[in-house]
Length: 289
Image (cartoon, rainbow, N blue to C red):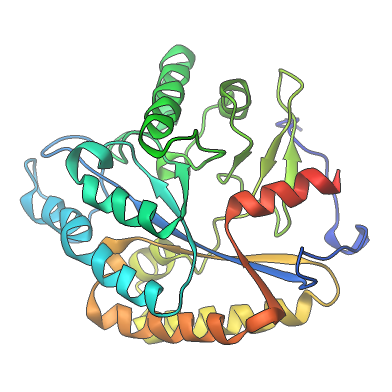
């Protein structure tokens, strides 16, 4: 059977026990996807039935996320002092720099997320992908004063060499891989491994609210249940739990109302959880080796 060769099989029940830095067994982090799209071309999630380009309705809904939705979301995050990772398309710096500045002012971690979500790495040849990754890292370094440690591909899409290119470009971790609830190591051709930080899960807002069409109250209940059951399971083995948010979805008041319930629950967990950022998780994985 064909294998990716990036990591061996490992049953979570058979791994050594350890704890997160504050003694908790469950690490929780929030990721906010900051995405920008060109007008009338390229990929983009169709929030309503797509039309021939220029599809002004779907473009407008996505643009609303940066003009309005993200500010509604920041209000909810600030209320409970929730730190986040900003998964950032570098086009944000050109199209709506105020958005990037707001997360910079909070001291949030910036994670590379491509140039725009109108394109995917899996459609690129190796030289094109290498140049895109390098350009994104350099732009973030110039804007934020330091290069990003982490990467999450637009559309969570990779080529067969993406981990190799990320390691060679100087990235420390990647959030594309969905195979575990603990950070793991990905082997690369250079010999410098890459930490895979758990990210994608069925309760993320895109698969739950957009694809599965869950009502917001059902989604919020599922997230709260997920935190509570993860806390229970983490007494047996340490776990991560993440919340992935897109302002053009969750920034709408009828969804934000229920997201606030989740944020209240996370904040109330106190020292039962380690509230962190993905870069913190990757750093722990390095120390565990």
